[in-house]
Image (cartoon, rainbow, N blue to C red; front, side):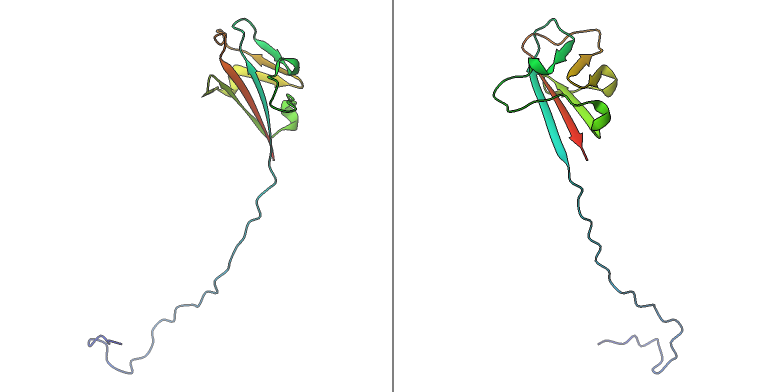
Length: 113
């Protein structure tokens, strides 16, 4: 080990650095459940019910907004602001002035933590 020649040998220690014991902190992830609702716009409706869901995607429900942590609405693949729709049990209501074009996919994602 190379010693700095400017420090005289056997000089007193002026400051002792504290030894910090290393801690491993593990965070167990929370259990997350994701529910999805898929439908296609007919170009006319603003209100979509569970019965309007696409078949072939398993059991689809629209959960009450109070029972989930948060919701995301995608229309034609674009995330919509939360003030542009309202969710209640079994019902999705679009609050925008315009209506999605006919054939546009509508995906409601509901996340429960």
